[in-house]
View 1: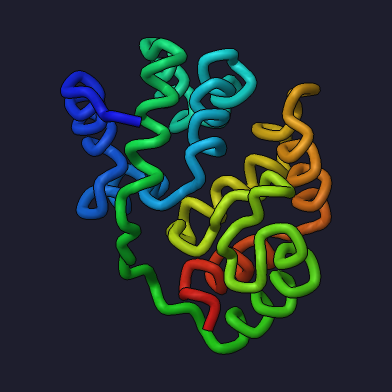
View 2 (view 1 turned 120 degrees about the vertical axis):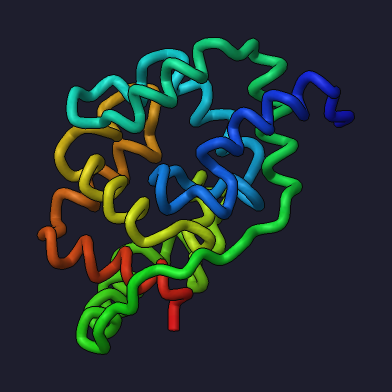
Length: 186
């Protein structure tokens, strides 16, 4: 798919929050390297109010407002554009050895079956890549799933599955699994 000049300009606007050098400050996820179908689906969920409508999800509300300005073709082109970009690592806080061990055990026991042994994602299961996401973003999303801010739409089966899995996690377990993934699955 050919990326138009207009989409390149729109992608620059997206990078105001999603570029590597600003992601930690903006709390936005890395889009680079993610599956284009997953990215497009998330944009459509934001547009339809299936994501970003929870009162506690301020970042999601901002993204929903932006997504609503996109046509379906623009959402598809942006998803393709970002999927083709190289991923970049962002330095995060160093987790403790105990936190990494707890996170490893939780990931292997609950997450790896869908998201892959290296958090690379699984297209057949509609499980996105987690490996390139910062621990702070992962922690916020797991908390959103657990607390009902995500995964409540009847049309979002993978989201409902994540919500069900996340309800079993305590705050410290969420921190541990997010730290483990964010540390690059040591």
